[in-house]
Amino acid sequence: MNTHCLKVALRTTIPVFLGYISCGIAFGLVTVNAGYSWWLAPAMGILMYAGAGQFLAIPMFAAGTPVLAILATELLLNIRHIVYGLPLINQFNACRRTKPYLIYALTDETFSLLTTTQVPAGVKAEEYYFMVSLLDQIYWVGGSLIGGLVGAIIPFDMTGVDFALTALFAVLTIDQIQKFVKERKGDKDDDN
Image (cartoon, rainbow, N blue to C red; front, side, top):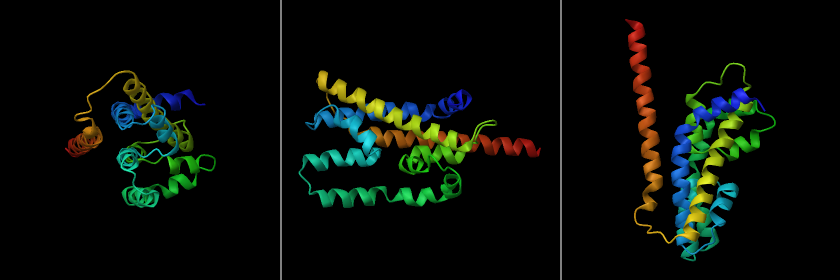
């Protein structure tokens, strides 16, 4: 493993780390509060890895929703991945060994990072894409594990926790807007 790539990917994924740890914890707490075992939260993060889909699945499971209805709902919710995956087709086609994982691990936040950051000099693109994707999933699973364990050990008032995913999207949107404005301002300063 290229340690330079790991360091750059760690720096690049800090905003996602902050959001995924907090939202993952919220998901773990929601899962346990719905009556499920603590381990279901990180297991879903490994096997399903779709934050909004995971938050949606728990109350549907708890309500006894038929499996076909859950699958259809999850498909409709996550169909956006196909649309925003299109700009990454050429980049991912060059990734022979990790392409299946990169497709699987493509979340809104990972897409944002992969389309707004440059592959660092001296690092293979495939390795960079893989490291960013893997770190993002580790953050989500880690947060889910923490939330699941805390929820199993300590009784917790869940008021407002279900708003965590919306808050994550708001924070990431604000971050992207700030970067865009800063870049535009830099471009105008260069013109003068």
